[in-house]
Image 1 (cartoon, rainbow, N blue to C red):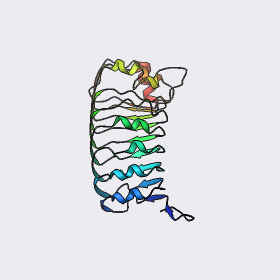
Image 2: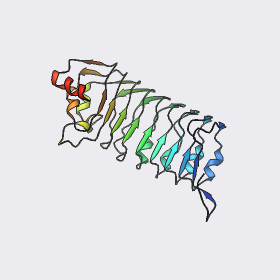
Image 3: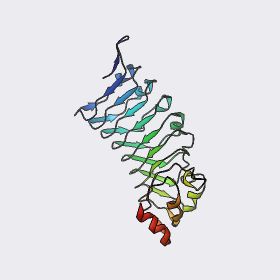
Image 4: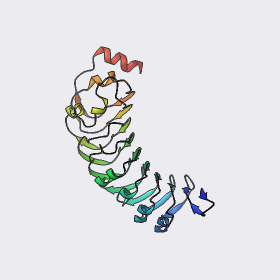
Length: 234
């Protein structure tokens, strides 16, 4: 538990895999110098207290693999220094708030394996985001608008819909369109949705893309031999 010896203020809490259980006390909001809160892989339950939004110095919020319930961490948009938010593998529900766009410094947002519903908001304003994992929720609607620096995108096991032509617009797939090899996307996983249309076989020609999973959708068409050979090499 790192601390500032000169002020006796707690700067970080790391209880990862510690076997802890119970509720997260609202008093955590009194630790105003905290820049890391890692309670991952424990048995905490109940709602995430609203006082988390008082941790203005927080850069890492890692609450994964617990039994937290309730909505997306309330007031999180007030935390302007946040870089990492991982609340995956909990029992959180409700929608993903548009206010998440206020967290401009986010580089990783992982909300997978919860009970989130509704549409994915336009996330293009999170221009530093490079990892987005929203898999295994109940998210619906069309493919979202996404930031151009994204290099890992995982949307499998939702109920997203829409036509594959959306992947050619400045939405999910604009970041991997051929443009002088400028694409940064490395992983694309939209497995288990309701996406349809012709297979986007040209994806395999994009410079940095290493993994593509389009399985269990309603795509049609075949993959040309030359593209199958490239996929085989990778």
